[in-house]
Image (tube, rainbow, N blue to C red; front, side, top):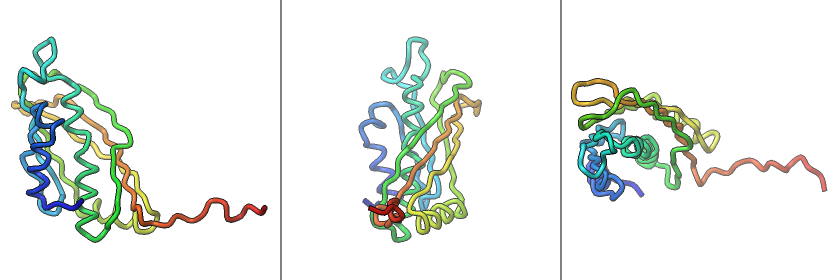
Length: 165
């Protein structure tokens, strides 16, 4: 489904896995080229050390790149796409003792490259990295996100065309 950046911002704000974990989408940039996300430290998302639960931090990073790229592709005319996080790796640098946030920015070149590959090959797998920082600007975690995007209308060549009965 296609949304405007503002509608997507509000949809993600009330998305239950975000809402109940204190994850707040501050902004989705025009053209779906970026996002700003804050994770509030609340009694519902802290661990026994009174720091942010790592699963909450990971949850905030999980969907952002697939959503941004999928919405960009729909904006430029793709009608049936699927985008998801194929794999991910989080590296914790220090405990989240305060609320944390991250900001991602996708260049026009990266978005155009994804669109070109999908037009010619039907799918693309792209790696992105984001940094999650606390109120002081100290790095708390880095997340590598391997994102898979596919055009469901793309016709892939048959694998068995050279096999004779």
